[in-house]
Amino acid sequence: MCYAVPVIVFIDDVSGNVSKQWNKHHVVYASNANLPREMIEKEFSVKFVSLSPHASPIELAKAVCDSINSAAQNGVEAWDCKYDEEVLLLPYGFFFGGDNPMQAEECSHNGLGCNLFCRTCKVGGTKAHKASEEGFLELFSLSMSVLPGAQSKVDSARQATGVWDSGLHSIIHTLIEMGKQLWKARPDNSQASEDAIQKQLETELDRLLQPHSVDDWINPLLGLAGVNIHMDTPTEILHTVLLGVVKYFWGQTVHIIKKAKSLALLEARMESLAVHGLNLPAFVPAYICHYRGGLIGKHFKSLAQVMPFLIHDLVPQDVLDGCRLSARQHETASLGFATTI
Image 1 (cartoon, rainbow, N blue to C red):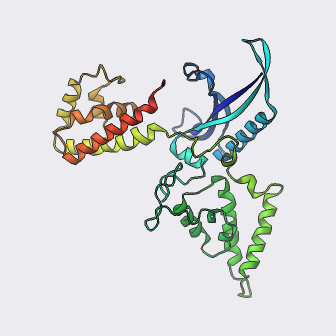
Image 2 (spheres, helix red, strand yellow):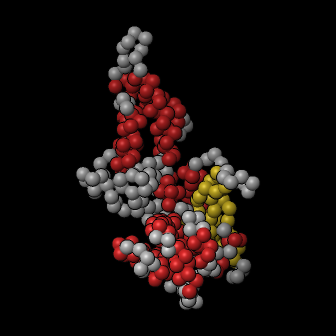
Image 3 (cartoon, helix red, strand yellow):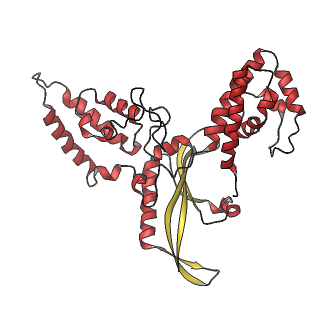
């Protein structure tokens, strides 16, 4: 008997120890998506794969992809204790979890700061041409390193297209530095031609990559069989909604209320709320109002549901409309928190 095993891969950066506040490590975990939800959530169902304080996420992902491809090609022999027989497992990538910056890196995307800011679709673009894909391939073109001002050209292309492969970063940086040195005037005040510099850079690149090629350094997730990495990185709700729109609306709202010296009234209204039917965690108004600038996801999950009822006469109409819209967005996003269909 053969079984297909969908694998959930989680890649993120974590702190490597408890004593220091931050000691950055990149870590990879994997889970079997065939397991029922009540089992897959348990700690023993999340398997450690790899960790490194030095290797980049794309370098770790290459090893993960090689392992998945090898196992899918050859199969993994196992014993089925229920049916008392030997089985063959064929794993494949199901989806890749992580926060938004990590998922952008997995997609060879530059993140929210670029013109084409979405890793899934082509929304955005330059002011002149919103749907433009101009320069998509130029980011990986060797010729950019030949021309003067190569670094600014690479940065402009990354900003315009949203494409950035962190695995190629060291190669691009090396070529740019080499190009700068080659463009410098020689002792006799002569300069090499562009064709000569191009040829010399190509030769030096081949030497540095031996025994590999450039293709071995390109993001392996882009070609992983059965995976469309741009569609198989589910939107991470915590940072996108709760610590995004909801957080900033809360900050603006509480600033207006505090300026009007109505913070005590807001806290009193929170205390009077009947939250029995809202499926909220512990709702502590005194803590929320006192530490209003240091709240976390669970607090914003609660506030998004109740804010329009608390501030209807404490803020201007446009702010109230924004909070209502935020609440509706949270209502839609709450489907992402649903554990059963």
